[in-house]
Length: 73
Image (cartoon, rainbow, N blue to C red; front, side, top):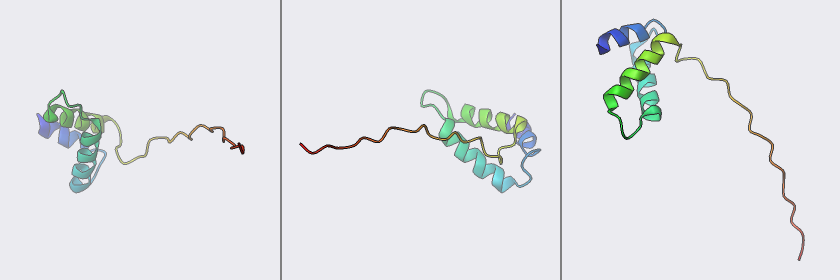
């Protein structure tokens, strides 16, 4: 049941309002058009139960791209 998922996710997030905000943002980003929205929401809450959603994921630095120089024709 979804209530079990919510209570499990509350172990990492103390504020219910913050949990709703984080879950809605994550659901929007992870949702695939071919699946039900309810299934995506349940998946997000299950992920929140095992990990802390408030921590940021490690950010990878963008790869250096060579700068092109223009020559006069």
